Length: 309
Ligand SMILES: Nc1nc2c(c(=O)[nH]1)N[C@H]1C(S)=C(S)[C@@H](COP(=O)(O)O)O[C@H]1N2
Ligand SMILES: [Mo]
Image (cartoon, helix red, strand yellow):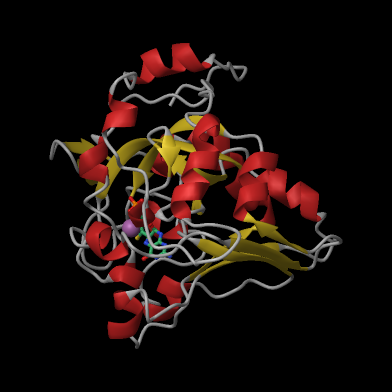
């Protein structure tokens, strides 16, 4: 990870050439589709049509990769999203019809300006950009993907946290009638919840992603909005966020409540701290199967190590 000193933005055409997507972005048809809620606000198809001009967003060249991008189709059929079951290969199919639009994100808790954002207004108000990030799952597989999104910091600044706010708690949806994993695995403490320290949430790397591979997120990647914290294990990157809450005490997190012997709140990628059942020294790239060494902080140490001194 060699960050360039200043963000450099390309125009849309240079971006397309750089990503090699000039022909494929439109052809893959990987944008989410689903059954919307009937009514004036329309459904996913209308939302996608209206957002067309926003994607792909200009790439921010401060965030570069030292490994190739993961094949898009491979990333889209190997998904952890327990709301739709534990079978990574089935999530895409089981999630396809989930009505992710209309969607609202409630920003609440210890803030001067609590509010409920419509996803439409959020994607239009926030500065969308594309970033190439590595992603490392605690299960020792990895990928490298182009996210589209905006820094969580931009939303936090609009909310104006009170001085008592020290943690940010993020909560996903709970709709067991539409999410078979929630219905069948009803022993899990749904909805999925995660948390960051406020300084981690404000860090430049912390992204709220609304897109991937140059188009809005397909449901299996967490439509319509998900967190991305690339120096932490993937379970921190909560999908399909419905609520963002500012609190003064360290909140519990979903996987830590389910499996307390595993990783806690911080969950930074660290090759020297094994999982109770496997080593974290190496990782497997999901498309090629190649095994590569895992880097501390998933390669983002230069940017984030200062948070943990
Ligand atoms: N709501 C929710 N978010 C979630 C999960 C989940 O089960 N539910 N799984 C996490 C895990 S373990 C990983 S590795 C990433 C996977 O993201 P991807 O499918 O887009 O690659 O999502 C994370 N976010
Ligand atoms: Mo994961």
